[in-house]
Length: 79
Image (cartoon, rainbow, N blue to C red; front, side):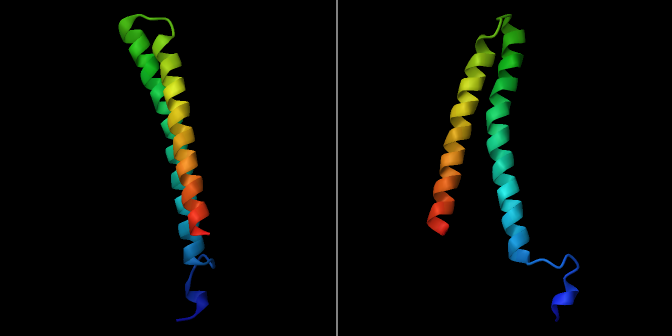
C-alpha cells in the first residue's frame, strides 16, 4: 500500500494529534463557559441580579485553568 492511498496526504498520527488538541481546547472552553450559563439560569430562577453568574464565572475560570494545567503537564511528560 503506497502513501498515495491516503486521500488527505497527511500522517494519520498528525491528524490524531490535531483532533486531540481540538478536543482539549473545546473541553477547556466549555468548562469555562457552562458554569456562567448555568449561573444566568439560576439568577433568573431565584431573581438575583448577578450573584450566580459571578460565582459561575469564578468556578468556570478555576476549572478552566485546572484543565489547562493538567493538559500542559500531560504534554510535558509526553515530550
